[in-house]
Length: 330
Ligand SMILES: N[C@@H](CCC(=O)N[C@@H](CS)C(=O)NCC(=O)O)C(=O)O
Image 1 (cartoon, rainbow, N blue to C red):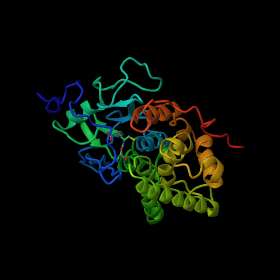
Image 2 (image 1 turned 45 degrees about the horizontal axis):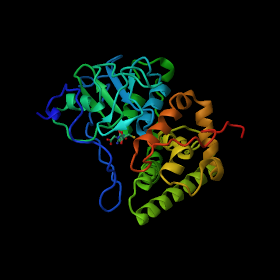
Image 3 (image 1 turned 90 degrees about the horizontal axis):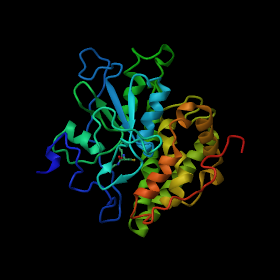
Image 4 (image 1 turned 60 degrees about the vertical axis):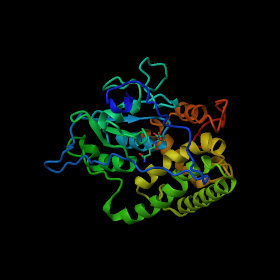
């Protein structure tokens, strides 16, 4: 019997979930997330905000999951939503937990003690055939996945727990009404060209596809550089930190340590070629604990270098760049 039909199986799925990223045309195409329910503070909502009810599954390596970890901390939700962290190693069975505590920073599955993240997807939806991605926002009450799309999870965290969080975090919305159109506009091309652009560059399997994407990526980094140069505050939209900064950070903090070399995004480095982005990055990392405390370079570097065996067959993790991030005064 296929263990896909058994929601509580801890056996590895028979079908490999990984390894071929690009389609025949050499292009990497990211699939849409499958679970799209919402936590809502509206009366009668199926998924109401409650302390301890929701659990977040993340990888420290994953830039999309990183968004949710930053938001959880920025919004004072650490005692309200607990987290389990997968091992940085990802094999043919997908993300796995670390029940024996061998990997610093990783955890077991704190809810069911299953071996693979895929087991949770199959528990939520027997027969699920999509990808087993992080982040996952899990509801302990109905034992299902509420949502596995980071861009939606962070918006729920911005607003929907405001009645139960510490007063000092209430009303802080990084997607405020008055800046929405600007945030949407910048998010659009940052996602396509930069957040996802590094993957489209790195996973390309044809020379011309790679060259197209790396060119677009660096044009868009130039665009960010100009925006930050002309900004009247430290952030993309001026003095106010917004979701746009939050969504850009996980890609930029991985850029020099991983993407430059591993994904061949090497037309320039943030530290040497983009002084304003570099300053913005170091401000977030060194001045706001939600950024530094959720950035785990060991998980990030080990994951990409030791998991993408087609791209780095011997699994050697580069030692540089040293340091992974410069101090602020440099
Ligand atoms: N749209 C998702 C993308 C998440 C995603 O692609 N996560 C990657 C890790 S960086 C993953 O878990 N991949 C596993 C797989 O595709 O099998 C989001 O933003 O939440």
